[in-house]
Length: 166
Image (cartoon, rainbow, N blue to C red):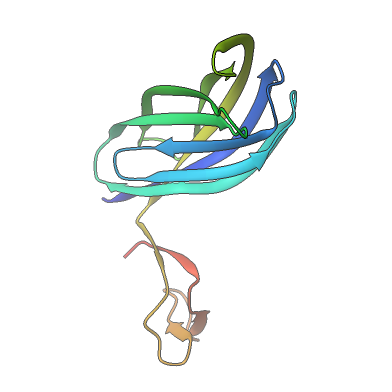
């Protein structure tokens, strides 16, 4: 049976030294990417639910190479750090699986200083049976569906996200 894995950026945490608060987080996998700009102070945490992408598979486990890059944006010199490791997903469980990426960003001013900011970027993988799609191709903006256990049709609006089982 096909399973859909939804990768989501869940949290960004800033620890270490203060080198600035304008950050850009870039996440890359083999076929998905995300770039997000946020303001975060030292010691701060940002909770998110930003979707990185979806993967459809029929395997029992999956390993995805994933790179997280954090850029502190400055007028002259951007401070950049990155972390790359394999995201291992057990498809036998339905529980969300989180992986924390540790990214160290050294301050640069034409030369590297001793100030290093650390970021913890949390990526979550959620497994669904079936495929996630959006309702589209409707004439009047609604799609009528008939539930398995029921006699009345239910109207779904265009662009709603649905999980298809069969």
